[in-house]
Image 1 (cartoon, one colour):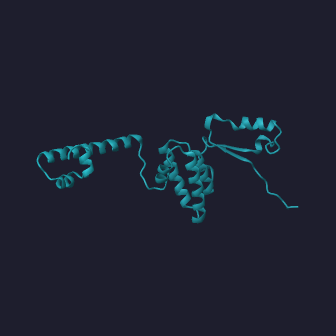
Image 2 (image 1 turned 120 degrees about the horizontal axis):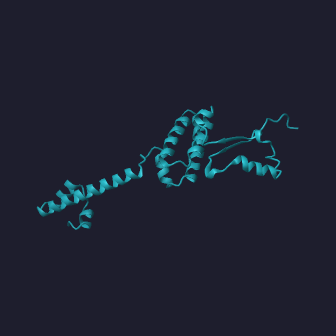
Image 3 (image 1 turned 60 degrees about the horizontal axis):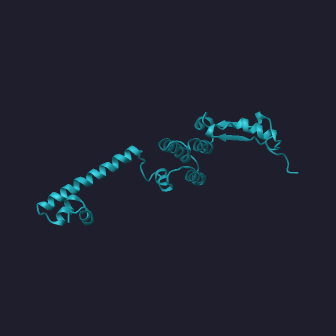
Length: 185
C-alpha cells in the first residue's frame, strides 16, 4: 500500500556507564520474544562510546557532534569543556539555522545531565566566563583575601596618621562600609 519501505537498522549507542553490557541485556530481552528486538545479534549495531572516537567514526557533522556530546557528558569538568570546544568547532561548520536547533537541543541535554549549577555551565559553554579549577579558585579567593587584608592594614595606618576618610577610600579602594565593618571608622 505504501510502496517500498526502506530498511531500518537498529543502532545502539551507549556510554559504558556502570559496566552495562547491552549485548547480554538484549539477549535477555530477545528471549522474552519481543518482536521489535527479535532480530539476530548481527542486525543490531552496537557502539560502545568508550571504545570509539566519534570524530573518526562518523563523517556527518551532526553525528560527530551528537556522539561526541554523548561520550563526554559525564566527563570531569575540564575534559567536558575541552570536548565541548571541539563540538563548537563542528557546529560552526553546519548551516546556521540547523546549527542553532542542534545547539539548543544539546544545551538542554547538558543542563539536564551535568551536575554543575546551570548558570555556571551556561556562562562557561557560551564563552562568557573562564573556567577555573578548584585549585585556581582557591588561589583567587586567597589572593582577594590577601589584598583586602593589605588594604585594611593600610587604612588603619593612614587613620593613625590622621588622614581623611576620603583620602583613605581613594588610596585603598575600600568602601566606607568596609571601613566601618572592620572598625577603622
